[in-house]
Length: 329
Image (cartoon, rainbow, N blue to C red; front, side, top):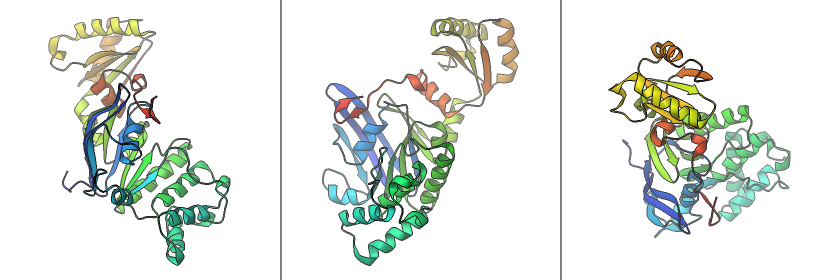
């Protein structure tokens, strides 16, 4: 990274009892970067979010925000953070403006300056015309924008969001992603967690978490390029059929696949094949294995392919390691 990191995570670990929820995770986030932590539910994202939000202490390792660590400068570190939780934190019986004024008072803000800043943030989030409305009258997408305005009241350097698109319809999701990209372009460092591939695609860089480990780190385009070639997916009726077919496909394609394990692999009830000559291989597979698969799809590598390439299993089959209030989820 060319810029000095604003967020630096160094060997961060967390255990719940004898269960390792986060395993020595390290990465940096630059000022003004939009960074996404992508992973399946239970992959470790929520645990990492809670650690970075200083809600729980690490079991090992540390992190710094603007050079401050939770060990020695917790209060100052928290001033650098704006946090948006997955579960709504707005008081639905208060107006939009009242929610911001109450939160501002908690932060030690007040007077005309607080009212002015609240109004400016609501306008920036596109909800200035709803300031006098009760929160309970807002759609999910508008309420999320108010949550973000609330998180930005204290002028944090880093905006942390946990699964910000949860519960939003497709249009609201697209609108939210555009808003977060605009915030990053304006200099706010945005760090979010997500299990949605299209949301992660919008980030400048991503970290992929699986079973508490960081298995990939980089720009989405670079990670997909590392998978290389074309990806063919053959769908069968069972895991057992896929395993047998993968063995036969691998043997039929010859020893040239050996240098890179995973070029042919059974992934659940599918067989996944990585080849530079994908289109030419389609008729070959159809002729060689008639009736052995229900469908065959061909495409360029996706972030889901990156996940499978790095982990060897489907995204939805990741093990649950995240903790919830000290319990393993």
